[in-house]
Structure formats: structure tokens, C-alpha cells
Image (tube, rainbow, N blue to C red; front, side):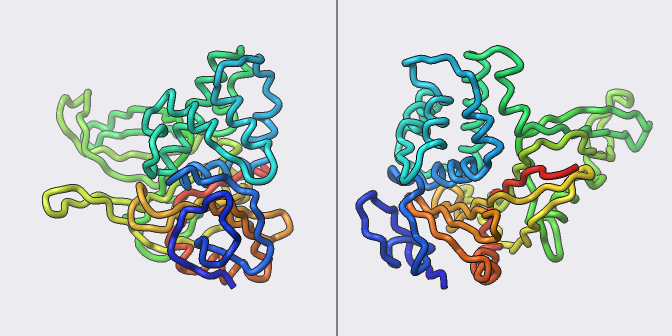
Length: 326
């Protein structure tokens, strides 16, 4: 049985005990995750998600990156993801802070924003140090394309606008009824109405918008938009929407099958606070919880009552799927 306890950041030499971390099983606990450097659970959660993808890790490690003594995102990330046992992510944190000062302090950050920043800085690093097409790892694995067709309701003028993405945001606040990853994903491509200026009419007009998925990436990342902002006592506060979402183990995307590899779980009321962990699907049906430096194996028979409990379904923040067939 998984036990919950008040969050406490783990230190490397802490003993393994139930009161020391959020999710613990009486056995199958290993010291094989990512050291929490002080409110860096968001970083450990994303690193666990990336490490759970053999497709990404293998592609990263096969890059013919030129040898250099200069710190780089590629070197730090590839070293961390290929290491065994407990891994200290300080080297990556230091390199990222050179590009974005927010990762140089000890503040909690949004795991979703960190994921996008990490793969963008990796892409910039590869683009500057490797020739095409060898430097296109990030676009090849994470980028998809949506074609949006805008139709003026007054003059029927049409405008086609492509949109590239590396993740897709799914709104859990604006959809009623039982929610699932498949239904939320499908809702992204429903026709909807907006108001915008029509160049042909030279006036503000209602438009219908029809999004069409043109290309899906091999690694599909879905973010559940759980945070909305409300004015309270003269200041904006983020409010978490705790709507339970059913996790489809497979998704149908453009006549292809995608299988879930992991999801990032957020416990707390604000994306910039609380605690992030990652739940990873194993090939044998077991799941593994990556919680800072510790990993806990959940046997297949206990998955339904633990990994997919109603409480956990309400805290899913990011889901990673990979294409397995077409």
C-alpha cells in the first residue's frame, strides 16, 4: 500500500523511511533518482520523464557532438541521462542558469515551463555545434504541426495558418463530463468561434476556426491546463483545477497508436510550489514512481488502486506518449 506523508525534500544521506517521502512502498525502493538540490523536484520530474524514453535517450547519446571543455546543455544532459544510481543534476542546473537566471536560484519552478526551456536550449546547443540535419533531434522527436483554417462568417474569406508545437495544452476547466486524455486531445480539433478583424471586410467579425492535425511527433507531450488565474484581494492568484482525468494507456493519433511512457504528477495548489513526481510505465505492466532521489516500483496488481487512484488522476500535469505503430 502506498502511504502519503507531508512533503519533505530528501537529502542524499537520509535513511529510507516511510515518513521521508510522499510515495513509498514497503519494498522495491531504490536510490536511483535525481538528487533534490533544494526545490528542484520540477527538474528531477522532467529528467525522469526524459530518461523513461529510450527513443530520446538513444537519439541523444548517438549524437556526434564535437568534444569540448566548454559547458554545454548537450554534455550535461547526456551525462545525466546515461548515469546509473542516484544522479546529481547540478551540472545541468548550472548550464541552464547561464542561459536563464531563474534556474540559478533555489526557487520552485513550473515543470512544464522547465521541459520547454530544456529542450529549446538543447536544440540551440545542437544547432550551434552540429551541421544539419544532425542537429535536428528536438524537432524530429517533439515537433508537430496543426493547420488552422479561419473562415469569416460575414464574407466567407478563408485564411490558413500553420502552427508548430512541441507540446499541446489540454483544458480541463472548459470541458464538462467525464474527462480522459483521448477526449481532451480530440477536443483540441473541434471547430470553434472567435472574434477577429477580417482583412477583406476591414472590420471585426466572428470567425469559425477549424484546427486540423497535420503532423504528430514521435514523442507527444500533453499538458493538462490545471491552473487558472483569479483576482483575489487585489492580486492575481493561480487556482488549481483538480478535475480527475482518466489516463488512456494508448491514444489514437492520425491513424497511429501512441502508448503512454509516463506522466508528471503535481501535488499542491500552485505550479510554482508543491511537489512534482513522475510515474513511469514499465514494459512488464509495473509502474515506477520517481520521487527526487528515490524510485519505488508498484507491481502490476497494485497499479489500479495506487497509480490510477482518483486522487492521482486529479493531480496529473504532463503526459508523455510515444508512437508505437501506424
